[in-house]
Image (cartoon, rainbow, N blue to C red; front, side, top):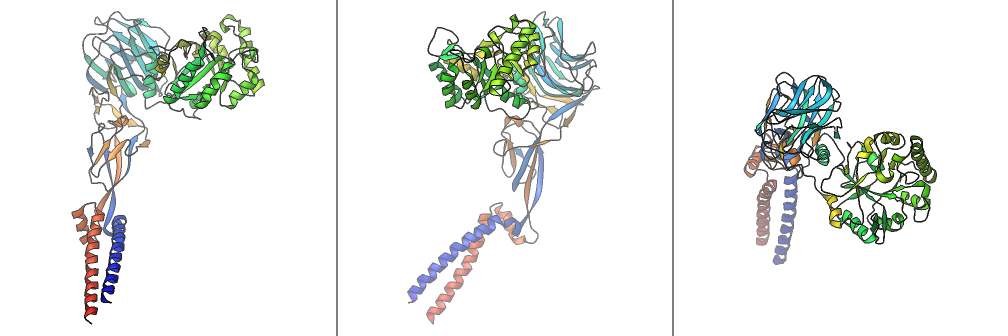
Length: 593
């Protein structure tokens, strides 16, 4: 009988021990701050390169947040403020490009904005008020000037100037738009000496604000110009939307515009596998007006002429990947043999396709009189409205031909007027649609033409990566918001020294994501996302402090640090030892009786 009692007591003792261990761990690990300690807020302002741990001023118990300012920049007073980057390495370069954001307090003044001494200079000039003036020098101090754009007071503008050796021209861009006011001849190569890159002054000073300054020792092409603008923290330029153009999708043919079904199938599969997402021009309009964001790797797939094969052959293949397209129809031949009919067109609309006008016939609008062009624009638009109850917003020029005056006429009827196309090649000029693309000059925007001679490897060039790092000498983002050093994030360590210029910001805080943008330990914070390298980071966290009412336990915390489970187990072991001791003594006493 005594043995059974012993077994029962042992079992009950083990169960009690298990329950007490679990309860003790829970209490000590989840409620220790209430029982044994207090937490106080801590914060630090850090500035560091990516993957460079920064030591916190106190040991953090837990992190609350890490934030950066939405926009920061430098203000210049036109008295003595400037930033100097020593020895800009653009000697003997075949070309040069400089870009920056500018907010001028008085763009009608004669002011020097920035430049590399005796190589390239960007300025405002009273001789051409409210315009950007670019000067490019050679070793003999010869130069040519190009005035461009209209700079609005107290407004942020994106400015880029370049010397293009391929056409020996000085060229300007304002807010992403190429200036066509003229191009200057350079009398020789850029200067052979290495001079300082100075921001905010040359031989006089600038009055206003500057941000995101970059310098390349080569001439960027037009698409790279748009990509720089898209890469800016100040502007969502849309990521660059490729616009490709087909005509017929059918069995193999010697007609160059007929792409065979096998090739088209492979092309659509590759677009899907490469992460492309199809949109329409109407979707892009939604992006422009802020009602819709663009998906990653957006692409517009357009079909000219309204061939029946678009419905019978192309659409079933595109449906597999949930792709939509833009069908540009010739309204006077809808329903003819080999053409889409209105039932086909309405079905395409129901799938999310856009129906664009390709005029009333195939006559080039350039060959029409003004009155006949108006009829072509208006009648084709009304035909689409009358048969689909949807107003078309895109006009594709027959043959792709137009001019500036025709673009103006067309824009009174449509949002988009375009049509020219180019085969895929390695120049990548003007073949992506950006927010800053000036479609008022639709003749200048080129779609990518896909023919039956386009190989899959050529088609795959749609997925190229725009390289903005080759030739990049200096990239100052002005995100530091403190100190007298503007850090170069190009990887060349061409840091700038700030004299006089003052930091400013928009007062908006952006919250960073832990383990994506940064990582932490109790004593450090490390920036992981290169986007925030050398950005002022404000950190908030909690600091664990000892409670005055629990000095003994506080001493234990001091010994064991932030390991509350270990503290709980130690306490549990002591408590259980007492319980077992009492139970044993009681059992022994009863056995003797």
